[in-house]
Length: 306
Image 1 (cartoon, helix red, strand yellow):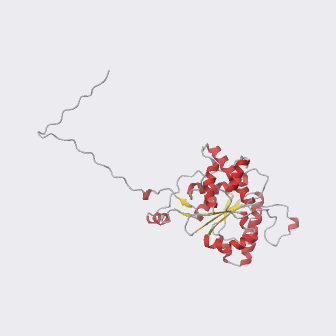
Image 2 (cartoon, helix red, strand yellow; image 1 turned 180 degrees about the vertical axis):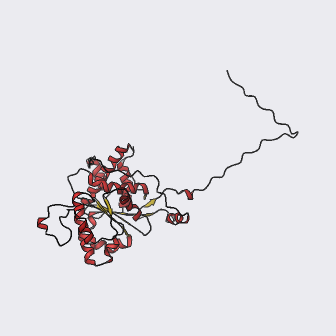
Image 3 (cartoon, helix red, strand yellow; image 1 turned 45 degrees about the vertical axis):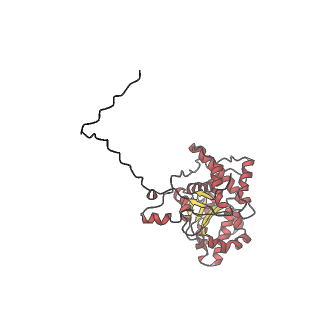
């Protein structure tokens, strides 16, 4: 399928939810990975990530990341009470001591990859028996991303996440929404539900996995962890479509989402808003012609065919 340079907001929401559900997919790999949204200010990054916190009880949004907060969540990572950790503003981690930011970076890499037994430096790792995993989500501006990309490449932070870049097709949509004193309407999106039995089967074929791998050509190398996350996301979305009897193809949906993973950032398409619709002019009916003498025109008799 050719790349179009556009992605619909409903598709992006479904893909974000599918990545959250990817940890339920049966696979020989336990790595969680994650997804980061990168774009200019005011392109709905935080709004899209907040969909997880609003719809899933096991997705936690963290406004300020501190090691003390992460240590208190340690048992929640172990027992699965928190399966996804969302950072609506990654930049807030770096607002304080750079050493703290470095520790949180390391914690994020461990939870999304090989797992961690302890969080913080006040515990004896020899006696820690439980491993914690967690899927990571975050938002950042393109300027902040370019400032840290070289350091993240050297530390291995880049290769653990899907880096999704985009910008709005209509930059004035939020301003028009404020003028009309309402919120921008994203249309109807069926948010996937959590599996009742805690398991989603893997349903991909080797050919489909090869196709998915080709979509990661412009992501940071190596692609192993990103590849796992995207494959699990397709299986999770396919399971959701089967449960809701949706005839759409999960591969097509994730392919459209993969527009955000390419070399050039795509345009995010938001549905037409009600206040943007131009009202149609109603044409008045022409009056019946009146004869000159003022009498009504004779009625035309209907002829029925037998």
